[in-house]
Image (cartoon, rainbow, N blue to C red; front, side, top):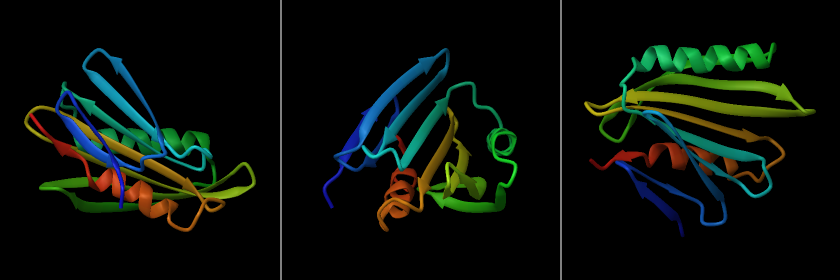
Length: 143
């Protein structure tokens, strides 16, 4: 599969070549957003050099989603991203007359804490969920 590669400031990941990319820096936190051109799927990769606790970061992200979507269903998840044990949640919720799914994954390295948030709509193509998951699972710390 043809992919674009984001590789800057110690963070590397792959994303679909037709997706749009945006980078935001605030203090010690860098957020890289990649989005499907139709707006039906996206991933946010945040690296925080202050190294907050991954479980707390994942829980804060979950609470923010619960504040936004009252009918949110969540399932706790532990899985590997590269060589790292990532904590997080799988989410399902209803918004804008469509069913949406999302994932939250968080892990810490000696240099930074990574938060990955991916979301996709059931109105998107069948492979959209896999594309978002592939972005998240391709995260590598390079420095």
